[in-house]
Length: 263
Image (tube, rainbow, N blue to C red; front, side):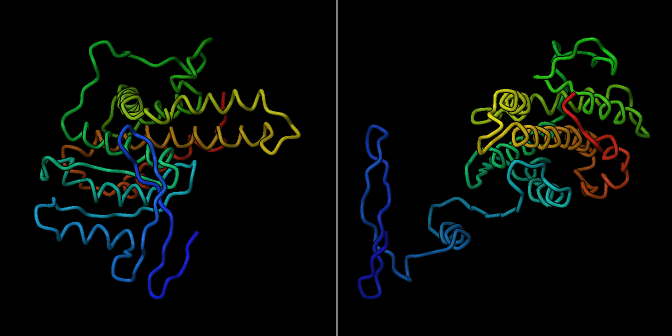
Protein backbone atom coordinates (compact mmCIF):
# COMPACT_ATOMS: atom_id res chain seq x y z
CA UNK A 1 0.00 0.00 0.00
CA UNK A 2 0.89 3.69 -0.12
CA UNK A 3 0.89 5.97 2.92
CA UNK A 4 1.20 9.75 2.96
CA UNK A 5 3.80 11.61 5.03
CA UNK A 6 3.43 15.29 4.15
CA UNK A 7 4.55 15.71 0.54
CA UNK A 8 6.29 12.32 0.65
CA UNK A 9 4.48 9.11 -0.25
CA UNK A 10 5.86 5.81 0.95
CA UNK A 11 5.15 2.53 -0.79
CA UNK A 12 6.60 -0.96 -0.71
CA UNK A 13 8.72 -2.32 -3.55
CA UNK A 14 10.66 -5.51 -4.12
CA UNK A 15 14.43 -5.30 -4.53
CA UNK A 16 16.55 -8.14 -5.85
CA UNK A 17 19.22 -9.16 -3.38
CA UNK A 18 22.29 -11.37 -3.53
CA UNK A 19 21.48 -14.90 -4.59
CA UNK A 20 18.60 -13.81 -6.81
CA UNK A 21 15.99 -13.47 -4.07
CA UNK A 22 13.56 -10.59 -3.56
CA UNK A 23 13.27 -8.39 -0.49
CA UNK A 24 10.41 -6.00 0.20
CA UNK A 25 11.56 -2.54 1.29
CA UNK A 26 9.89 0.84 1.73
CA UNK A 27 10.57 3.42 -0.95
CA UNK A 28 9.86 7.14 -0.73
CA UNK A 29 8.04 8.84 -3.60
CA UNK A 30 8.33 12.60 -4.04
CA UNK A 31 7.27 14.83 -6.95
CA UNK A 32 10.95 15.41 -7.73
CA UNK A 33 11.88 11.73 -7.91
CA UNK A 34 8.71 10.31 -9.46
CA UNK A 35 8.89 10.09 -13.26
CA UNK A 36 6.79 8.65 -16.02
CA UNK A 37 8.46 5.91 -18.06
CA UNK A 38 9.20 8.32 -20.90
CA UNK A 39 10.64 10.87 -18.45
CA UNK A 40 12.81 8.16 -16.89
CA UNK A 41 14.35 7.33 -20.28
CA UNK A 42 14.95 11.03 -20.96
CA UNK A 43 16.58 11.39 -17.54
CA UNK A 44 18.90 8.44 -18.16
CA UNK A 45 19.99 9.83 -21.52
CA UNK A 46 21.12 13.06 -19.85
CA UNK A 47 23.32 11.36 -17.27
CA UNK A 48 27.08 11.54 -17.75
CA UNK A 49 28.58 8.30 -19.00
CA UNK A 50 25.21 6.78 -19.89
CA UNK A 51 24.51 5.52 -23.41
CA UNK A 52 21.84 7.28 -25.43
CA UNK A 53 18.49 5.58 -24.89
CA UNK A 54 15.22 6.24 -26.72
CA UNK A 55 11.72 5.19 -25.74
CA UNK A 56 8.98 4.14 -28.16
CA UNK A 57 5.51 2.89 -27.31
CA UNK A 58 3.48 0.92 -29.84
CA UNK A 59 -0.08 -0.07 -28.82
CA UNK A 60 -0.91 -3.69 -29.71
CA UNK A 61 -3.85 -5.75 -28.44
CA UNK A 62 -2.78 -8.69 -26.32
CA UNK A 63 -2.62 -12.14 -27.97
CA UNK A 64 -3.12 -10.62 -31.44
CA UNK A 65 -1.21 -9.83 -34.61
CA UNK A 66 0.20 -6.28 -34.72
CA UNK A 67 -1.91 -4.06 -37.02
CA UNK A 68 -0.19 -3.03 -40.29
CA UNK A 69 0.13 0.60 -39.19
CA UNK A 70 1.94 -0.48 -36.03
CA UNK A 71 4.35 -2.66 -38.00
CA UNK A 72 4.94 0.36 -40.24
CA UNK A 73 5.95 2.41 -37.19
CA UNK A 74 8.17 -0.42 -35.97
CA UNK A 75 9.95 -0.57 -39.34
CA UNK A 76 10.60 3.18 -39.22
CA UNK A 77 12.02 2.92 -35.70
CA UNK A 78 14.25 -0.08 -36.44
CA UNK A 79 15.30 0.85 -39.98
CA UNK A 80 18.57 2.64 -38.98
CA UNK A 81 19.65 -0.43 -37.01
CA UNK A 82 18.56 -2.93 -39.67
CA UNK A 83 20.44 -1.16 -42.48
CA UNK A 84 23.59 -0.75 -40.40
CA UNK A 85 23.45 3.02 -39.85
CA UNK A 86 23.40 2.56 -36.08
CA UNK A 87 25.84 -0.12 -35.01
CA UNK A 88 26.14 -1.69 -31.55
CA UNK A 89 22.57 -0.72 -30.68
CA UNK A 90 20.71 -2.89 -28.17
CA UNK A 91 16.99 -3.40 -28.71
CA UNK A 92 14.89 -3.98 -25.59
CA UNK A 93 11.22 -4.95 -25.73
CA UNK A 94 8.65 -5.27 -22.98
CA UNK A 95 4.88 -5.41 -22.49
CA UNK A 96 2.57 -5.86 -19.52
CA UNK A 97 3.29 -9.57 -19.09
CA UNK A 98 6.61 -9.75 -20.93
CA UNK A 99 5.38 -12.63 -23.08
CA UNK A 100 3.28 -12.39 -26.27
CA UNK A 101 3.71 -8.79 -27.36
CA UNK A 102 7.31 -8.67 -26.16
CA UNK A 103 8.15 -11.82 -28.09
CA UNK A 104 6.32 -10.56 -31.19
CA UNK A 105 8.37 -7.37 -31.14
CA UNK A 106 11.58 -9.36 -30.75
CA UNK A 107 10.66 -11.62 -33.67
CA UNK A 108 9.84 -8.67 -35.94
CA UNK A 109 13.14 -7.00 -35.04
CA UNK A 110 15.04 -10.23 -35.69
CA UNK A 111 13.35 -10.57 -39.08
CA UNK A 112 14.40 -7.04 -40.05
CA UNK A 113 17.97 -7.44 -38.80
CA UNK A 114 18.52 -10.77 -40.54
CA UNK A 115 16.95 -9.55 -43.78
CA UNK A 116 19.06 -6.39 -43.63
CA UNK A 117 22.20 -8.50 -43.31
CA UNK A 118 21.46 -10.59 -46.38
CA UNK A 119 19.84 -13.61 -44.74
CA UNK A 120 19.85 -16.87 -46.69
CA UNK A 121 18.24 -20.20 -45.71
CA UNK A 122 20.51 -22.70 -43.98
CA UNK A 123 21.95 -25.43 -46.18
CA UNK A 124 19.90 -27.97 -44.22
CA UNK A 125 16.63 -26.03 -44.59
CA UNK A 126 13.68 -27.57 -46.48
CA UNK A 127 13.58 -26.75 -50.18
CA UNK A 128 9.81 -27.01 -50.51
CA UNK A 129 6.58 -26.91 -48.54
CA UNK A 130 3.90 -29.61 -48.44
CA UNK A 131 1.25 -29.32 -51.12
CA UNK A 132 -2.18 -28.05 -50.13
CA UNK A 133 -3.64 -31.55 -50.44
CA UNK A 134 -0.75 -33.37 -48.74
CA UNK A 135 -1.89 -36.33 -46.62
CA UNK A 136 0.24 -35.24 -43.68
CA UNK A 137 1.44 -31.84 -42.56
CA UNK A 138 3.46 -30.83 -39.49
CA UNK A 139 1.15 -28.39 -37.74
CA UNK A 140 3.67 -27.66 -34.92
CA UNK A 141 5.88 -26.25 -37.70
CA UNK A 142 3.11 -23.97 -38.90
CA UNK A 143 2.04 -26.06 -41.89
CA UNK A 144 -1.62 -25.06 -41.63
CA UNK A 145 -3.69 -24.83 -44.80
CA UNK A 146 -4.03 -21.06 -44.41
CA UNK A 147 -0.25 -20.68 -44.14
CA UNK A 148 0.36 -22.89 -47.19
CA UNK A 149 -2.18 -20.87 -49.18
CA UNK A 150 -0.44 -17.70 -48.00
CA UNK A 151 3.00 -18.97 -49.04
CA UNK A 152 1.60 -19.91 -52.45
CA UNK A 153 0.14 -16.41 -52.82
CA UNK A 154 3.51 -14.88 -51.92
CA UNK A 155 5.11 -16.83 -54.75
CA UNK A 156 2.53 -15.54 -57.22
CA UNK A 157 3.26 -11.86 -56.56
CA UNK A 158 4.81 -9.92 -59.44
CA UNK A 159 8.59 -10.17 -59.43
CA UNK A 160 8.66 -13.11 -57.06
CA UNK A 161 9.33 -16.83 -57.43
CA UNK A 162 7.86 -20.01 -56.04
CA UNK A 163 10.54 -19.86 -53.32
CA UNK A 164 9.34 -16.52 -51.95
CA UNK A 165 6.74 -18.01 -49.63
CA UNK A 166 9.07 -20.78 -48.50
CA UNK A 167 11.87 -18.35 -47.68
CA UNK A 168 9.51 -16.00 -45.83
CA UNK A 169 8.25 -18.88 -43.70
CA UNK A 170 11.79 -20.17 -43.06
CA UNK A 171 12.94 -16.72 -41.94
CA UNK A 172 9.91 -16.24 -39.69
CA UNK A 173 10.36 -19.72 -38.18
CA UNK A 174 14.06 -19.14 -37.56
CA UNK A 175 13.40 -15.86 -35.76
CA UNK A 176 10.53 -17.37 -33.77
CA UNK A 177 12.86 -20.14 -32.58
CA UNK A 178 15.57 -17.60 -31.73
CA UNK A 179 13.12 -15.65 -29.54
CA UNK A 180 11.29 -18.58 -27.95
CA UNK A 181 12.71 -18.32 -24.43
CA UNK A 182 9.34 -17.28 -22.97
CA UNK A 183 6.87 -18.22 -25.72
CA UNK A 184 7.27 -19.96 -29.07
CA UNK A 185 4.80 -18.12 -31.29
CA UNK A 186 4.37 -21.12 -33.60
CA UNK A 187 4.08 -23.82 -30.95
CA UNK A 188 1.59 -21.68 -29.01
CA UNK A 189 -1.01 -22.28 -31.74
CA UNK A 190 -1.02 -26.03 -31.16
CA UNK A 191 -0.74 -25.64 -27.38
CA UNK A 192 -4.02 -23.69 -27.36
CA UNK A 193 -5.65 -26.21 -29.68
CA UNK A 194 -4.67 -29.01 -27.29
CA UNK A 195 -5.94 -26.97 -24.33
CA UNK A 196 -9.30 -26.66 -26.10
CA UNK A 197 -9.53 -30.44 -26.42
CA UNK A 198 -8.96 -30.86 -22.67
CA UNK A 199 -10.93 -27.86 -21.38
CA UNK A 200 -14.02 -28.24 -19.20
CA UNK A 201 -17.04 -26.76 -21.05
CA UNK A 202 -18.32 -25.37 -17.74
CA UNK A 203 -15.06 -23.70 -16.72
CA UNK A 204 -14.17 -20.02 -17.03
CA UNK A 205 -12.02 -20.99 -20.01
CA UNK A 206 -14.11 -23.46 -22.03
CA UNK A 207 -13.00 -25.02 -25.34
CA UNK A 208 -14.35 -22.02 -27.27
CA UNK A 209 -11.97 -19.72 -25.37
CA UNK A 210 -8.90 -21.75 -26.32
CA UNK A 211 -10.00 -22.22 -29.94
CA UNK A 212 -10.53 -18.47 -30.35
CA UNK A 213 -7.09 -17.79 -28.90
CA UNK A 214 -5.55 -20.44 -31.14
CA UNK A 215 -7.06 -18.73 -34.20
CA UNK A 216 -5.63 -15.39 -33.06
CA UNK A 217 -2.22 -17.00 -32.62
CA UNK A 218 -2.45 -18.47 -36.12
CA UNK A 219 -3.32 -15.05 -37.54
CA UNK A 220 -0.32 -13.59 -35.70
CA UNK A 221 1.95 -16.30 -37.10
CA UNK A 222 0.66 -15.69 -40.63
CA UNK A 223 1.33 -11.98 -40.29
CA UNK A 224 4.90 -12.72 -39.24
CA UNK A 225 5.34 -14.73 -42.45
CA UNK A 226 3.94 -11.79 -44.44
CA UNK A 227 6.26 -9.42 -42.58
CA UNK A 228 9.22 -11.67 -43.37
CA UNK A 229 8.32 -11.58 -47.08
CA UNK A 230 8.17 -7.78 -46.89
CA UNK A 231 11.54 -7.59 -45.13
CA UNK A 232 13.25 -9.88 -47.63
CA UNK A 233 11.93 -7.82 -50.53
CA UNK A 234 12.59 -4.40 -49.03
CA UNK A 235 15.95 -4.92 -47.32
CA UNK A 236 17.97 -4.03 -50.44
CA UNK A 237 16.19 -0.65 -50.69
CA UNK A 238 16.61 0.14 -47.01
CA UNK A 239 12.97 -0.66 -46.26
CA UNK A 240 11.96 2.33 -48.36
CA UNK A 241 8.33 1.27 -48.83
CA UNK A 242 6.21 1.49 -45.66
CA UNK A 243 4.80 -1.88 -44.64
CA UNK A 244 1.15 -0.78 -44.72
CA UNK A 245 1.58 0.62 -48.26
CA UNK A 246 3.30 -2.60 -49.35
CA UNK A 247 0.47 -4.68 -47.88
CA UNK A 248 -2.18 -2.58 -49.62
CA UNK A 249 -0.37 -3.18 -52.90
CA UNK A 250 -0.45 -6.93 -52.19
CA UNK A 251 -4.03 -6.95 -50.91
CA UNK A 252 -4.51 -10.56 -52.03
CA UNK A 253 -2.33 -11.74 -49.13
CA UNK A 254 -4.91 -10.70 -46.55
CA UNK A 255 -7.62 -12.40 -48.55
CA UNK A 256 -5.90 -15.76 -47.95
CA UNK A 257 -6.51 -15.25 -44.22
CA UNK A 258 -10.27 -14.75 -44.58
CA UNK A 259 -12.11 -17.42 -42.62
CA UNK A 260 -8.82 -18.79 -41.30
CA UNK A 261 -9.09 -22.19 -39.59
CA UNK A 262 -6.88 -24.59 -37.65
CA UNK A 263 -6.83 -27.21 -40.43
